[in-house]
Length: 213
Image (tube, rainbow, N blue to C red; front, side, top):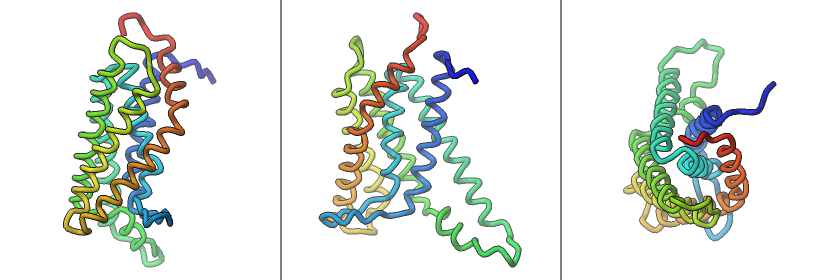
């Protein structure tokens, strides 16, 4: 098997991982994790959602802001298809011996407000990330520190929008702020650990880049 991918093939690979990361993040968010430290709790989506920002960062830096924005749209389209199909199966009849309907319903049923909050925060946070990445790297070489700061700010915006819209009226303002801070802090730690791999991914993606690209 030839693993020497060209510039365009690398973009396809990054896009596939981007779409999968976003879909998985929305799926596992139904699980709430108890951190057991200072009363911190956060949706399990924090385990993979920072990867969405890292890939957005890489795509915007290597392929440009316009390509990153198109990738965001593809990510939404992929998740809409996933939500549609997983919702459809809930309405299909099951034989008597199948006992998994309750579990499927628990995992795949989400309120419209949660879905809308997810899409709005996804668009705003990632578009901010893509735009800032383009600005801070314009005319300069890739900088891990600058791009880490961009990811951190973008994730903070995302957390405020998503958790605020999703849980306003359901939990107290204090609880919402704790969730936002916990999710953001864990995302920063995750991103810091992944930063060296982000730099390597950028360098990998840029190899074979055409002069006109």
